[in-house]
Image 1 (spheres, rainbow, N blue to C red):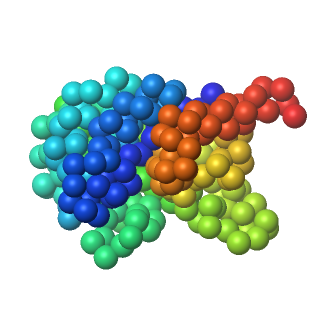
Image 2: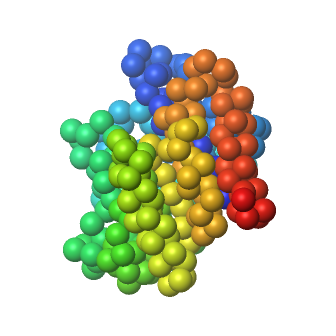
Length: 247
């Protein structure tokens, strides 16, 4: 069964809207773990729009499962990542103008630079993942730079307006996942996943972990954080059950 890693960025988004002390993403991470999450994800952006270094440092001290730091491939973030030493770093593209991450890394055209970053983190015993579009050439490039994992960008799948469009995006994801698994890369997936669409992807056996944040935080406003996490864990487990029974 795939694991659930909860992204608590948007808990910090609410806090930063008032420059207040609450809600605390560190507390939210603890509640997520108590509810069954097997990882915590944060994106320390260069503009510090939500997660702050204070949050990252406290999470490193308190997370009991796995801490995954999403970050741009920049010298500033490299220094922070090597200092904090999360369990995993996920290198992502970043633009200050974007509301949220808009696409995957262009690994193929930046192979030499990314390979240096990957090597520095791996030398520090930090697992490295690359956030990429479900594109076969990008998967091959991720293998070339010697990443440990890829995280497949599921945004276009989640945003598909018709069943045929969603099926097309699903096929792209499945093909990329299978190639990554074949060449020895671990596979995670995330971006835009919610309670309505997770069932499609939970049935793909090669995906080890789903990174989900906004949907869980939005539901938590109505039902509470622990319940929101438990419900997502259950939906992922149902996908695994379908796979086991062949239904």
